[in-house]
Image (cartoon, rainbow, N blue to C red; front, side):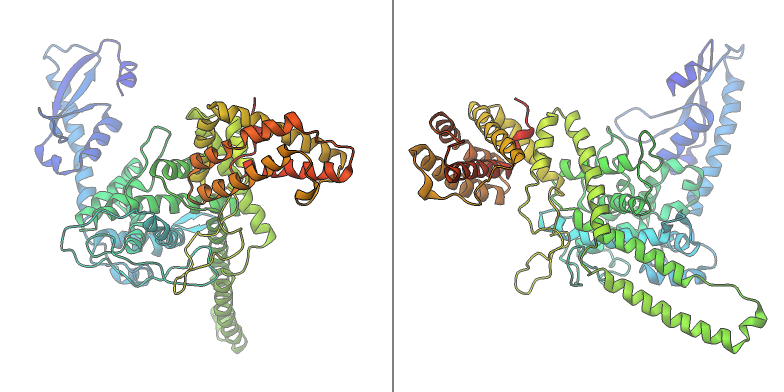
Length: 592
């Protein structure tokens, strides 16, 4: 604003205007935006460290008036008071009941809303009015329904990783609809109930996440946000707090939009994390489903920013989730909602036609068809992924990898190390498309199944461990030996040379072969256990034990022996080196 004002005046003269103290009941952000955006003026604060505003503002005139600027300040004060009067009206209106609440009952029941609360009323109206989110992705109400379900499911892995909402020490009544909603695990073929353990103040984490997601877009129907769209989220938080929502719910209403840029902070409250991730995931999967992906420099829906937001939230908070199953299930829910809307669309017919028995029969058949189709779509959520779904999910995962590369390079990571980790495809979870085994009596965990490299946090940790390891002498030497083995294998594979399926100990003729085979066995076991604990530094230390046996092997053993069986056996030994190191990274991708 300083730069803007300095460009508007030639001879700046700073004056002070005033407004009534009654306007200070308006949130400071609204006052600041009103005075700044409309009047190009600066707000002031009273002395001290508080965040409150003073009933005065600074304006910049382009003339030094004879009266010292009194008339200019008075005139600006009148305009500011008029603007703030409108803002105060909006602020009070948003806290009052909406007219004709009866028409909102269906939407209130759908989202378990309490129509005695102003923000709940606004959410019900948002759904009732069928406000469009995107022509191909349905209404805001449908989107909120998807986000709420996904946020509720994300609460499960977050809770198991030790994320717990801030306890609410107040003696508040239960959340609207608490405990009523049932969630479907994202990657499980079995429908099950989401964990509802206490998340603070008697409310479960899952209930808090769902409640926050339901209210997250409600302030789009408020008067203040209608006048000042920049305040969406922030006003929702204030209205949520005023109607007595759990602190984590109120915070999530604002913070689910974060981060909105590379310098913006990420949400840290667990409920905010769940809703922010759900919101961004639904956006990304939705636009992938309708093939509205970013192309070149064009990204009209800020999908790159959304993906980077997911990455920053996951990495900076240490959230470990496999995203691939979420891509599949979220995509199916979007498609199911779109098809359901198409089936339920009403056809307007002339009154005379409606009296026809034939038309009535068609209407009855259509109703049966709608119910059958809805049931069919629900069943499809448990069907294994189809080829086209796998291709779309992999494409979105590749987009995340590209954004992750940019993020890590900005953090100083080497691009070749990132490529090496991504190329390895290391994953110790159940392969995609299969149900993860559950303990007796337990439901399968949402997002527990995964395609390779869909856990973004593990990718980052592997890059960090690999970078530290390669800075050591053992790391540099093992890299050289492993790359040599990989290069020999690549050359022989290109020529079509036979490589034994497994190593035959009886064909060993040199002690270096036996030593290397034994070292690989020990390193594989130790590194495998470390990877299972997700201790990639320990896995690297285990692999470093291969340095001397690998060096000795290449010094004393001729791989391309004249005997075909011996050569194939030694190539199989090199394949074991590549496989052992490849559990963490593809060393052939690393420079040096």
